[in-house]
Amino acid sequence: MKRFLQYPQVVRFFRIPSQFNNIHRLKYDFLVWDDTVNQNLGLNNQKQLNDKLLSRILNHKDEKSKKHMVEVYIRMNSNHRLKDISVNYLLKSKMRKTLVCSKVQEENEVSNLLKRSCSGTPLILKGNNIKSTSNVPRLIRGEPGEVIWGFIPNEWYKFFIPVSGHSGFYTFLFTFTTYLFSKEIYVCDHEYYNGLSIVILWVYGVKKIGPEIARSLDKEIDKYELELNIFRDKLKQDLRDSIQIEFNEQECMEGQKMLIKAKRENVHLQREAEFRRRQMEVYENVTRILDYHVAVNEIRKKIQHKNLIDWVKKEVEKNLTQELKESYMKLCLADIQRMLKATEIDKTKK
Image 1 (cartoon, one colour):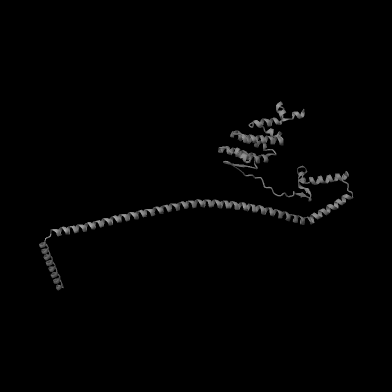
Image 2: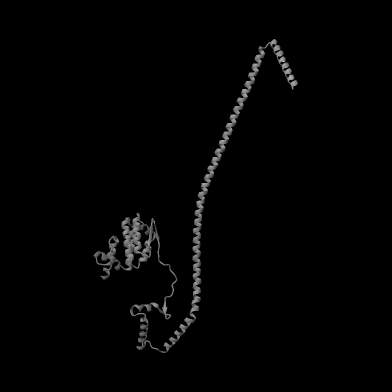
């Protein structure tokens, strides 16, 4: 009967006071949350409630309710062991869309909320991107803790300081050893002296041989670490080279744009040159045609003038009689003789 009453379904049905009631209530109503509920939840119940909350946030459409559910989710995990896991899951790609609000004021509210609740992992919300600026330190190689007397942890010594001061550990060690010897709980037989001699040899070996062994082992560790660092540095350099190649490719694409622009200008220049060549060709053809028409017109005028002169001569000759011809011939000869005499007189005067 007791096991039967422990089932969540039975508890919810009979309304038995239990932490499952809180889970069931929050499963459907995220706007009501009591911080005392978080103290009563176990690890498995916390995981179940986280899964319910995340699924509800992802499927919810109201931005205001979604933002409030994110606030409840962070408050639930702020003081719990699942804080880091929950926050990292909250930063996944599916949750990024739920944290981005349409207004700048809502973005600032969510950003401040995440910063207050997760001081180790602040968020910067910009548009549709969430940039994580985690301050969690990187994992480094573990080193041995501090010890006293070569084998006693320093934490044991510090444990007695708040209670009995700096001499508390030594007082406890002395009194406890005295108690063991006085009550014969620890008996000093021959095995004790054998162990004491072994401890002395062990301390001597640690002091004398230990540093050499430690240096040799450190060399091997440093060598192994150097190989890892070389691989990591090479990988970083390859990534830097890839980034530089990408930048060069982008510059080449810019050069391609300039080349396309230059080609277009070259095509325009070729079109302009062809246009001017054809204009010159038209001009030469028109000039040649005009010169032809001018020459034809001049020849026509010359021929017409010659024909006119010939026609006039013929008409004049038709109207001249023989007597007129002879009188004109005599008149011409008289004019020629007078001109010859005038030229001779001019020559003699000179």
